[in-house]
Length: 300
Image 1 (cartoon, rainbow, N blue to C red):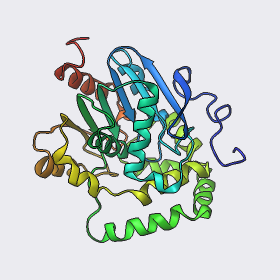
Image 2: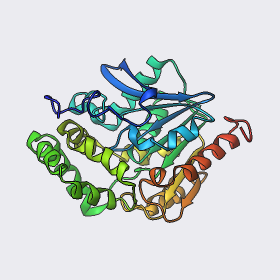
Image 3: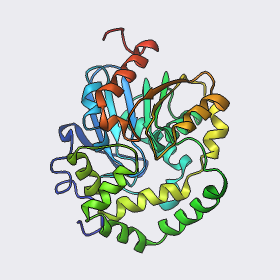
Image 4: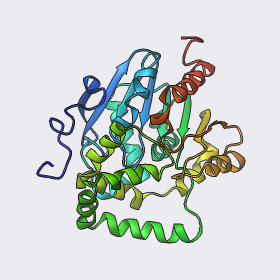
């Protein structure tokens, strides 16, 4: 572990998936780890809480046959530096992504967010920081917790996020392989051992754990629930029907009450990490959406 509790690129990133596509970029006061690959229309990928670009390890190269892919580690995650605690909010993360896109000098044609990444992209679009021709939510975390869980979750997350000891304890527990295996199993997904390895490699660093807890503590999905009806971009929902992190019922609720025009794609037998379980199947859906929107030529 590095002295400051952060993942070290030369050590932890020595065999990072798609390492040849990695670069470090200064934007919005942060040092970002960004992967770029492929050519064609620009597709921006945002991973979810607690993950990093390793989440796209097999998914990204498939889509790079059709798109120019841009995939950053979110603030505080993986090899991207951490902003102040208060900037780990949904508006703060959207602003950071806007700064990165501006610095890179690109305007994404299509965007895809996994879990919390979908909420960040929606907020960024509502604020005019990006202007894609389509927005794809992959097992998106889009609606606030209801009832008692909602009243308990945020205060507990704030307590954990602001106590550095909690992050260190989580990181120490992550040295136990079985702890990480149970964490992955709790998503409803089944990963190959190498996939579990990358999550363990990150979670054993307190800074990565702290970023995840800070996001959860600052998260206000009421902003998404209120904003989704005003989203002026074609919206697509891809949902694993075995997702036990974000209930598939949430996507159906979004479609029924907030975005009846959204198209929903269900993935039988797949969990929250569907794109890691069957990357080609999910990539084909994304390619098809690109073709239908005119972002890609048909059969490109």
